[in-house]
Length: 120
View 1: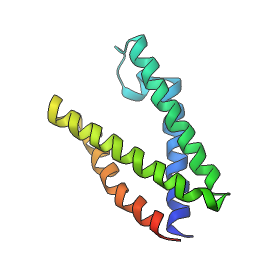
View 2: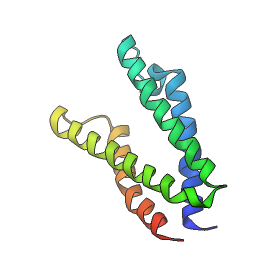
View 3: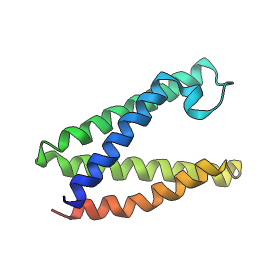
């Protein structure tokens, strides 16, 4: 199995699962029962965007000509999340260990996504 196919498939499945859970129950996904209606609405919107991108990534597995676009979406979203979380770390202080771990994982996945994009 090629790197690009495996990478798109794994991230697509993870994306569908995490996005669907976040859309259904943002309070549970964030382990925060104090979220207001506006915050939950915005979180569901971000999760919805993530769900559509994950579904597109999975769809691209059957349409090779769309895989570059799917990988570019992955690179853009990973970069944006990582930049946003690093800025939050700097401005707001150190988040919980799960968030710090996700920053590291996301940052490590960016070059893997780039390598997958360059592999044919």
